Image (cartoon, rainbow, N blue to C red; front, side, top):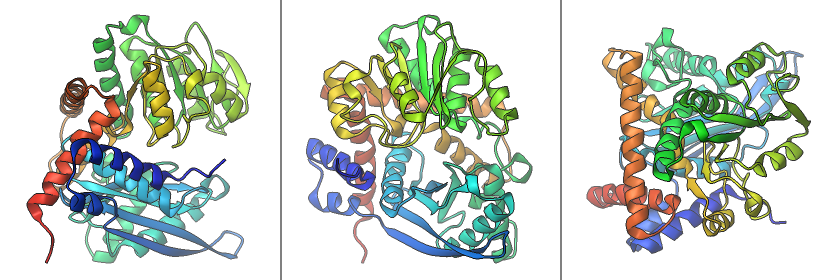
Amino acid sequence: MAKFNPWEMACSQLDTVAQKIGLDKNIHAKLRRCKRALIVSIPIRMDNGSVEVFEGYRVQHNLERGPAKGGIRYHPDVSLDEVKALAMWMTWKCAVVGIPYGGAKGGVVCDPSKMSIYEIEKLTRRFTSEISIIIGPEKDIPAPDVNTNPQIMAWIMDTYSMNIGYSAPGVVTGKPIEIGGSEGRLTATGRGAMFVIDEALKYKKIKPSDCTVSVQGFGNVGSATAQFLRELGCKVIGVTDVSGGLFNKKGIDIPKLLEYVKSSPAKSIKGFSDGDFVSGIEKANEELFNLEVDILAPCALENQITSRNAAKIKAKIIAEGANGPTTPNADKILHDNGVMVLPDILTNAGGVTVSYFEWVQDLQSHFWRPEGIDKELKRIMTKSFADVLAIAEKEKCDMRLAAYILAVSRVATAVKLRGVYP
């Protein structure tokens, strides 16, 4: 089997929409490339006294609509092509919800589960120093992603601030509230996904109280999505994480599971008593994808739903909490089978939307109430769903292509208006 390449997948998605909308070939050529990519070496003195050198990336795809925005992930499988793809997807995501950012992404090739907190701090601070030449409140604003969190964002902010000589909270979002973070940011991606799913349920005429859900991944995005869908009235009957899968046809008690994971030394769902546990991530995900549910929410990594397993999926709606979880070949199978796919660049855009709110609050030194943030997030997510749905119905296409038509058209307009320098 050919190795999955997320950058090729992202370019393929762009090519499809470019052909659909008759995109100017010069603009297409520009959007098919990233504006800049920085590769850095990160030497760290480990706790045992040895020096280990890690590799890190920061990629900016497009800056036509504003400064770059995108998370930083720490993972052994991080690659330059993955980060480039994620940066491109961030460009489209920001455009879909209409916020004035371009797309960026960052990553470090490491396994934080095998590192001490002190090693992770040193890695973060050195990485920040290395990429400080291209980040900043007016240039590129990082945020949390896979295996990064508010504490890591605090170290990034502090390191950047030390280098420039004054505090700059606007350099990063997703940081603790005490140093300029925003209310609601930690759970924003999950809450935004819930708003989009709620609109899809209304469109499909499915009552939340009659709705069953399965969630792949129980990290920040997956756990928050499960929590908010349960509050909406849905029944979550399957959840997986790196340890395996938890299944209960009567419904999993998500608040209790959240407490269990929080207190568990391994921070995993393994050992929770409310349901049947399936060991092994591959076996658990296979069972999860085969569940007869109304909603399947893949909230883990990319390349999860492929041509090998798409035909077995019985869900009516797939809500992509993760970035790039469905391959183009799988998309076609799902569309032919009548499955409504709520694409990542719409469904998980709640995180970058509230990151935008945080950035605005930092620049103004004026902070908003939680209820105001939730109200504004709901307004943006529901409007974006309606905009994408209107295009899907007009063009008689699936929601992903519709979202890309909306996003690429907005970015292309900005490219055309700004022209080519010099």
